[in-house]
Length: 99
Length: 231
Image 1 (cartoon, rainbow over the protein chains, first blue to last red):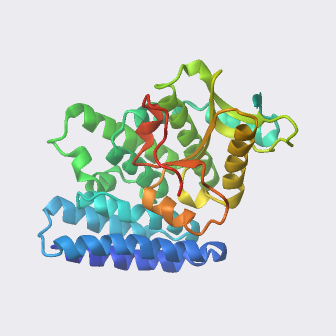
Image 2: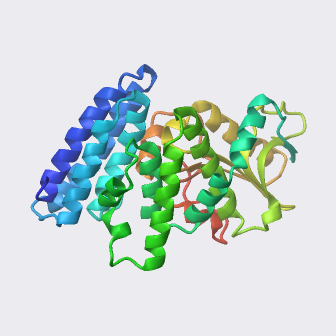
């Protein structure tokens, strides 16, 4: 379970990399998948840079862990693309950050 | 510029059944009054795999916390239950429901700003001397002095050159004949994802507005405009 914001962002980016890898199987969307990971990754990195050492509340830590666990349930490449655009929003919401 | 009901083909008949489903109407009612967090909950659950409501309560603790107002908590519970219902259907049906929900939500929100009778679904927009587009607009606002055309999508991935070209062409034709037509994409997705998608599009987009998960309420506000232009 992530303990601070930097850990949470690292956990999230790791989950996003797995989604990207799965989503890339949709050949026509390779560029979009890559752009999504980069664009949302940049936003998450900016949060880590600003608040990295901040300790997470138990509820926020559990929310991010659970959201990351949801990505592990995704087996379909098309669903992975949907989740790659949704999951970072969920993480940011748990961190009380705008998208 | 004039409007016409879309042709009723086999696809339209099947889709009309989904549009008329009570679940779609219930979703639109709930989401019209939802917070942006509750709308994100709906998006996540309807995109997700888990059918366990408790898992989603853990994912969105603030929406279900004892400290949340009871009305808000009730709404979150209702949105969660409904979203799980949609998510539990087969992939194709889930996709159709999600699209129909965005359209119905758009119509609900627009009806807060203009008379409900001015809001229409599945309409084509015709211009003198211009070959009509085959694909109808998901939602239109038809007023004597001006009109609005909306293409509604569940996710940014649905944005492509065809839809952008159709929206921009309609706006251009209206302008050429001196009519007022606002055209917009309504996306049940984050602005950032939409921007990322649009950044690779080469279609001319100057007059196409963008409404996203964060700005849906602008559809119902009195100063006509869904927020900023696509670019």
